[in-house]
Image (cartoon, rainbow, N blue to C red):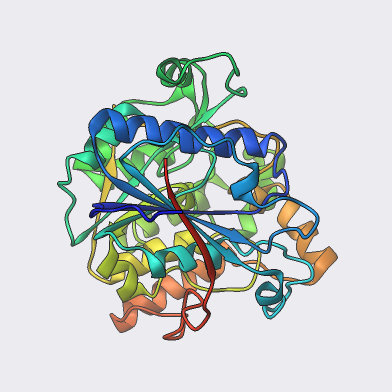
Length: 385
């Protein structure tokens, strides 16, 4: 197959394996590629999409063979890089964890060719406004970009044309992952957008008050000892102590005021900054909180965070199962740890690492110089869509 000719301004990195994750996986990943190809053609914006196929199942066809690819166009270069079962087996806990999501993404980040790299997932769709922003090529080297994630309540109907799909997404949002919590779509207080962007101290106070006196959202700075009570009944929590915790966090936050909600679905920064971080922390455990830790690292690398607000939207296609902050709250993660003996990266650990970086004024790096499996000669397929 011929390699894409010409320079690209943006590399989009995703990772997956053909295991029908969440059911309907092939339909979601096919739509991901079709929509990006359609938008790139619309805006005549050449992009590179790197799909890292991690630990493919031996009795299943490859992703290249399984995905329903769009008709060939001029603006999207696709590179499928395969990390074999043999390489996967060299990692700790590889017999239990079949897919190391963030190590897989590092494989793509390390090999990306564009000056800016967006790490995302294969069940994500971009609003036209968001894609147009990316196509304008006005990204800054000293900034990392984040966004709210809008979750769809139902699977996208098969009979919709590509130009109709984004309209369907706008009209079928179930909930939104924001900086401070998860809101049902009809309960999102629009004032928070302005407060967080223009006056973060007031935004933090506002999110705390809305949590305390209305919603059941769970800010990340709530202490571990209060979490069990919150799951059962918010009234059983000592609200005076929570207020003290909130005030302390506002004055001297142990974790920076960053947008870490669903950050694995959209983190965008310059290639040279990804390389300065050495990609995501390559921790051989469950794929939760590692993306948050990467955002904190970027912050202590003296990068500015830019949260893309409405009308920019990131749509998450509906499926039955996925990692989310709720895994730590509802007991699922604790059960998984007990059953397997594999400990996840917890919020309390994130807090300790953040405090260490704040105190030492140095970024913590977790990876060696060969991060992203740089020492391996990996199989790669290149083509255009």
